[in-house]
Image 1 (cartoon, rainbow, N blue to C red):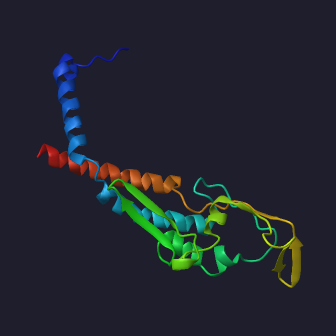
Image 2 (image 1 turned 180 degrees about the horizontal axis):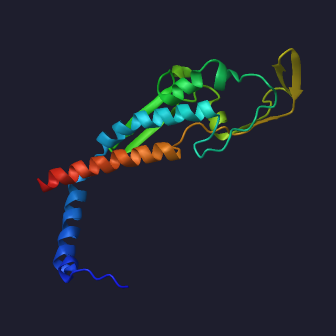
Length: 184
C-alpha cells in the first residue's frame, strides 16, 4: 500500500513560503526570551523542591546515603539550603542575563546571605585539614578525628524531566503566540 500526497501539497512555493515565514518569525523573536524564562521560574523552583523531597538528583538518582543516621543540618534541619535553592530564602541567586539566559542557584559565600557548603552538596568534595594534622568533628556524643572526609555529591540544582517538559510547554506556547502575532 502506498500513500500519495496531492502534488500541490508539496509545491516548491509552499516550502519556500514556510521557510520564509519561519525565518521571519525567528527574526521577530530575536534574542529576548525574558517572558518565557520568567514563566519557567515557578516550575524550576517546584522541581528543585521535589529533589529535596525525594532526596534525589535532577536525573532521578537517589542521593548517597549519609555515613550515620541523623538529619543533615544543611540539607534537612534548617531548610536554609532548600530555601535558597528554591528562591524562598536568603542566598538565592536568580537573574536573566542578556534577555536569553536564566541564571539560578545558591550563593555559596558566607558574606551577603550565602550558604556555605552549598557547592559541596551540589558537587561533592574531599575536605582536608588546613592548619592542623587532623579534622575534628562530632557525631552525636562521639568526637571523631580524620585526615580527610569525602562528602559525596548530592545534586539538588538542575532541571529534571518533569520540569523540562513544563518549560518546553511554556516555550512552545510562547512561540505559538509569537507566530500568531507575526501572521496577524
